[in-house]
Every structure is written in C-alpha cells, then in structure tokens.
Length: 353
Image 1: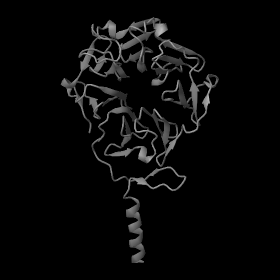
Image 2: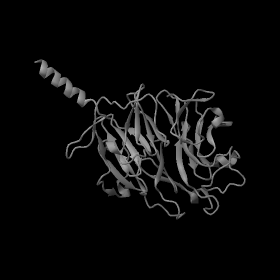
Image 3: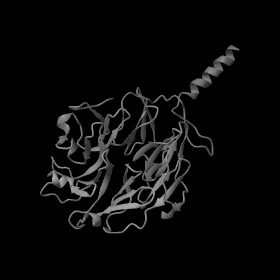
Image 4: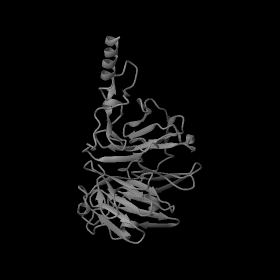
C-alpha cells in the first residue's frame, strides 16, 4: 500500500511539472490546470498589440511576436505557436457566449476553451457578399490581407467578402485593421483603404472619394476606428491623423486642432513631437474622454475641448501606444511598443506589474 501511494504521488508530480501536456496523435495541444512558468511580471518585449478582460476577470495581453499572456490577478501564463496558436502576433482578443477565448492574427483565427487551442479558419470556405447578416452573439475578426472579414455567429465561423470594394488607391487594400461596434446594430470595419459600416441590412462606405481626398496628397491609410457613446465615428490614419464624422458633419480633426506638422508628408514618414498624424488605436474612457495612441508622438486625450499630450515626461518608457483598452471597471489600459503595460491614475501613468 505504501509503495502504491508513493507511485501515485510520483505520477501526480510528473503530471503537473509541465505547462503543456504532450498531445497524442490527432489531438491538439492541451494546457495543464497548473503552470509552473507563471511570474508576477509581464515578460513581453515585442509590444502589446491587444488587451482584453474576460468574464472571469482575467486579463489577456496579445504581443506582436511572442504570443499571448493570461493574467489572473496574481501571476502570468504564456501561450505561443508552440502551444497551438496560429501566429505569435495577436491582433485582437474576444470571448464568446460560452466563455471561450478567441485570438485574431494575420494568419487566421483560433479559439481556446481552457483546455486546447483550435485553428478555426483552417479549410474555411470563402462566402459571397450575399451571406452577410448579423446576430446577437456574434464576434467579428479581420481576415489578414483578404478583402473581407471573419464572423462567428455563436455556432460557426464564416468568411465574408466585402461587397465590390472600389479600388481608388492601388496601394491600399481593403484588409481589416480595426473593428468597432456602434449604436443601432452597427458594426464598423476599418480597412487600409476605407471603412465599411454594416447594420444587418445595408452598408455605408467611407473612402478617399467620399471624403474628397486627393490620394496623391493625403491618402487614407486607416489603422483604427471608434464609434463613441455619442455616436460619433472617429477614423485614425497612418499619415493624416484623425477624421471625425458626427451626423452630417465631417471634420479633419487633426488638421482642425493643428496637429499635423506644416512640413509633414502626410503619409508614413516619422512625425514631429506634438503632432497626431499616425493613430493606431483609440478608446473612450468612462468620463467620455477620447484617447488616441500615436505611433511617434505619444498618447493624446480629448475632453471635448482641450487636447492633452502624454509622453515619456509623464512616466511612460515609450511614446508608441499600440493598444488602449477599457476594462469592466471603466479603467483604461495602455499597451506600449516596448512591451510595457500602463494604467492612468488621473495625473500620470503607472505600471500595474
């Protein structure tokens, strides 16, 4: 009996000594319920591309090159392509109605049910524009460089092609770069070449032509979209800053606030301090302030009247915010290019771990 007990204890020790269980043939990688690689400091260095808080209160951080990290409030667990992810760059993270976590990458979409990671886009059929619809529990994802989007309706994932995207600038594709849910059942799909708004019945298209832009002078190159609580649509670009659409009014917001430098090439060239020309992420806080992450000039906050710029002088170690996320408590998290994560305390930025 003593020998049998020791044998059982040995097997249990070996079972929980690894982060990832070895998969058998035909089985995806599965994760043990106890991981020994947990630490109390986020160890990513390649940039935080996405942040998400799930229904259990856990936080997920998607990196540019190192996969994703799960933070349970005490410690971290890490997942990468070695554990079943399609790609180590995680562009967005979402949760479905059953509590499964979904990861978007340039190479496809995968899901995690707490046990295994599944490639959800492998072998998926490319459907026509006639299959567009909306439902209550849907999730939307970019489809890499394909000119369309992935939609999970709560039961299955499908690919939807954009309806006849008009080629205005041959250097820009309709590959999805940002997604925002809005009022009146609207979903906004930001792409390099334009924005598609879909309400379940019809599309609204915003592009260089509808905005009256000269693509030789200041072409759209959209990297972020946001519909705020007032129903205003913000469009962040890589080169010409932010456009604001409010009702029938369309404003070149960065130009209006003198945030594009007089010598700017209005394209992808590096910006001067104090500008807002390359906006890759946007979010609204619980007080209705709009926050912008600029590639070169730090973080900006708009309170409805005044624009405030935050840079290294305010406690940041890097001036490039790749992601801004509002959690369940209404607090904003900022994911930076150098792999650091910050929260704003009302005056300055602090690292939570």
